[in-house]
Length: 130
Image 1 (cartoon, one colour):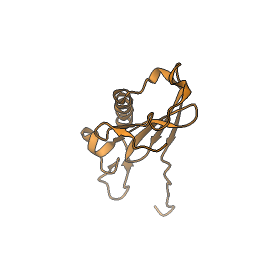
Image 2 (cartoon, rainbow, N blue to C red; image 1 turned 60 degrees about the horizontal axis):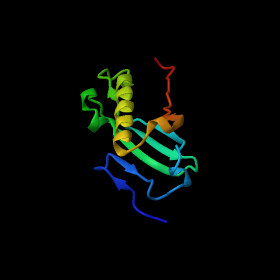
Image 3 (cartoon, rainbow, N blue to C red; image 1 turned 90 degrees about the horizontal axis):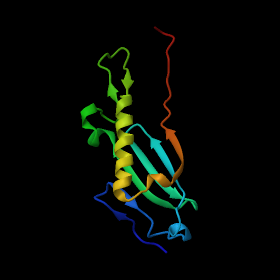
Image 4 (cartoon, helix red, strand yellow; image 1 turned 60 degrees about the vertical axis):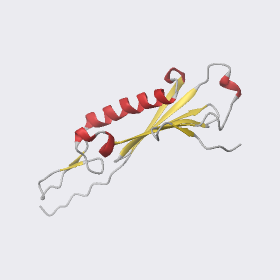
């Protein structure tokens, strides 16, 4: 059965109508996956059969503008060091916004049995020529 997920102004997607399961009658067990990338935080809730039920995203630059990031980071003004950072509290706020967004979309976070996370890995190059 294929159908388009319903959306709530593109803030989140609800997939339950796509994959009805017998666990709808009793308390379902769900799993939350979090992906912290450079530009956004994405959350996906899946059921016991790994069917996607809910999905939401928080874009750092456009939705958390108070942190003044560009591409999810703040670039240092010192051209010699070119330091690039991401405010830790921005990620915490993004997680709070994401969880609220999932609940508004209809997710029951009390059914989440486990949380998995991933983060963007960067490569650092250090020069011996100082």
